Amino acid sequence: MSDPLQAPRGTFDILPEQAPLRLTVEKVTRAVLEGAGYERIETPTFEATELFTRSVGEATDIVQKEMYTFTDGGERSLTLRPEVTAPIVRSYLQHGMHKLPQPVKLWYLSSCFRYERAQKGRYRQFWQIGAEAIGSDDPAVDAESIALLAEILEQLGVQGLQLRVGSLGGSAARERYRELLKTHLRANEDQLAEDVKARIDLNPLRAFDSADESTRAVMATAPLLLDHLDKEDLDHFAQLRLLLDAIDLPYVIDPTLVRGLDYYARTVFEFSSDALGAQSGVGGGGRYDGLAEQIDGPPTPGFGWAAGIERILLAAEGLPEPEPLTVLFVAIGDDDPATRAAGFALSTDARRAGIPTQIELAGRSIKGQYKHADRLGARFVATVSGAGVELKDFESGDSTAFDDRDAALAAVLRGKGVA
Ligand code: ATP
Ligand code: MG
Image 1 (cartoon, rainbow, N blue to C red):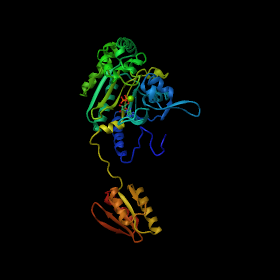
Image 2: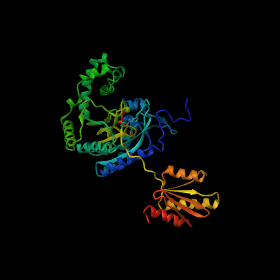
Image 3: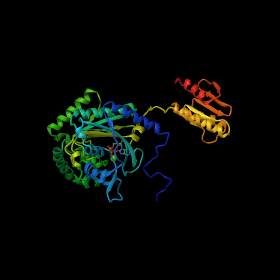
Image 4: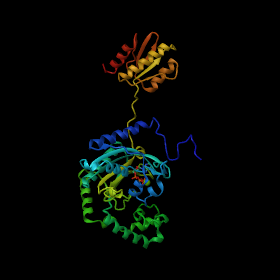
């Protein structure tokens, strides 16, 4: 049964008191990424289902059980985006962005949708910030992108951060390794959790993610992909590490780092925070050199990451409290329609002059209006009545009477140091 008075399970309202913190996340993200030449992109909330089944991968949790898929009036299968990388690569290909100087660097702040078990830090609609650099396989792209996310998380005061990096190599090495791993899993099949066993053929690498005790014991002796990479991929990984070392960004190499999306190749990484408990992933990403081909585009290398805004906010400390915005409150001194009109005109003039202004809208008593202005943090209250305008400046404590609105307005502007 659905209740029209409740937001759906796993979703939440962003209430006005939470909006300023989110704006801070957006501002910091924008400043850091645009400072490095990234430009903002926004893709549709839904895409052709096939975009995700082909890129994210049929065998992944996301495609198997987390997608919100529906058929529209034209019998098309559409899916609310569970992630934004595939849509952005789709957009890059659709708009011929390969003709631009490469790599094309794009950032986003978008909502994503996954049918998951809702709990703290895990929702069914959540927001991601993310960055994608498409069109170059230079390891400097990887290092720079990781460093930019590190900078954003640091500026936002995310506590207890740890960075893990790994490499999945290219598809040939990964294919060979998958066979080795499958052999190991089959040899120990009786000790594996049911869901791992069921996916030996489909997605053996996911076994490294299992929380099951006895599965973990089997994985502790499993062959590692990092030991089976081609020379070129090892070189790429070595260059990435050299660049990360050059900027003193601490990281640990995690040969078992498996991400829940099939399109990754070569570099993968994840930032986690020990301030988060069970849902510890703050953000992560990697290189997806095969993604464009998976959706029928030409070979196009790419690198990107996404970080969850809700988890950033859960793990952040010391973010600034929002400043009150209202500068002027226009109080209505009596019930006369002409007074109301004069007050209304004053508030509109003030806004046109660039002064953040609110006006009494609920018929409060004069005392109530002053209280309200105080709650709003207004510096000035202009009380309009038949006699003119009385302007109170809360900073200096002065009250001044004016015959007309323009003079009162000029005084507000002077008080603010504007004129
Ligand atoms: P997890 O392992 O926690 O399920 P993930 O590997 O599925 O995360 P990604 O697909 O890499 O996550 O998404 C990037 C980031 O988006 C995550 O690090 C996390 O901060 C955030 N995120 C992912 N799923 C959710 C969710 N259901 N609710 C809130 N944030 C999420
Ligand atoms: Mg997940």
